[in-house]
Length: 537
Image (cartoon, rainbow, N blue to C red):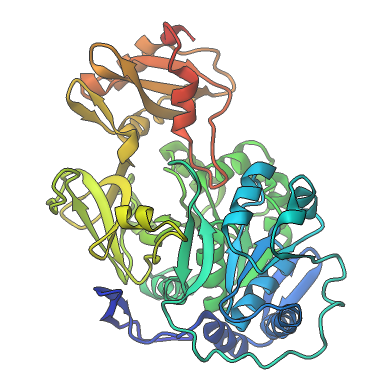
């Protein structure tokens, strides 16, 4: 392993104590260089028929850095990336880091107006894009944007300088911003999260520690990871790519999630590690001939981004016999802060695990901010080396959620006596019915057990008497025609208190999700707010 000693120390950052790894790198380029030297001739990146070793990746990144420097990029500049998952994306990311600049990564699924707002907001010096994504720039007034645009075409490698430049890492501090990722925007306008070198390095070392900690992971022989989540998402860029780097794994890049392509790659490339959201796994298991494929190579499956329905997790275990499943909880602002290993999943099936090293958590009262004891529901707050430094150019929003060294996540949660975390919903999604709090996830966990229900989202709607009514949007299984509110309430009896039971049921063909796979419940509230007699829908 790159590092054997995972000792933790307390240091002061921005006037507050945080836990961080004692043995760590100062910059992520320093970490990358160490890994490239250690795993020199091992395959690191795979795209189609192209394979790059760690050494080749480092050489291309250095040459790309020289090209960026030639057109004016320098230490401290913002360099944007608008690309699909690809070799050119990863090489560009490392090149920007070699320069000591900041990578600003944009969601490739944004509408032109959304993209234009973020581009203007980000103070870019250069924007790197691909032939697949460059047409998006033609749909906006890109000529008025004050930065240079570079399209890395099919022959991008041939256009690089043959020699790299000398780019010193001197003057780059651990807590300088290395990356800006935008939040998913489920709470409103996406915000640019300033992620530091320390944050990213901690993510990588945490992945190494988890691998060494649990029997079965280190011995799994897992060497090939399939990256299906988009690299503009924290799960893919800060977690999956960095864990592949630090563990010397090969990383297969696919431009977008296609369940049929995933099945083919799992078999052809003998993939060992698969990571994704519950939505991705559902599509993989229900829309493809996955059960006929050769999947015995898959050793580790990780998931996160949204709650995992118990029935879907059962499907995963049946389709991938002997696989080790890891559930991770995280946010763009703090990466993955807790992990649930398979060996605890039967005892704590709805838990998101225990906090990882360098992550301190506490549950606080929403009204007075005091820490709560075991099994009491409050807002989850976290601090440590994984927590980012705030939102770019949004000091008031930063001050609202980063308080006294703690990041207040907006997630309602509780911890049991053994320290396992349970997420019960978002603070803004909590339903107050006649003075009683209803947490949507608690209701969803019960409804996911119903044999007629494929997927469900619980949310609150205005009620003139009780304040709010518990409503649910339901996707039925393919062989089911309908389900009514009475049938649902009868099923919930014995599992939920009366005030938690759904009063309104909507049958829907799909649920609105953001690019990270999270259900956008605000869209459901907006859609069904004025509906009369919704239980008959």
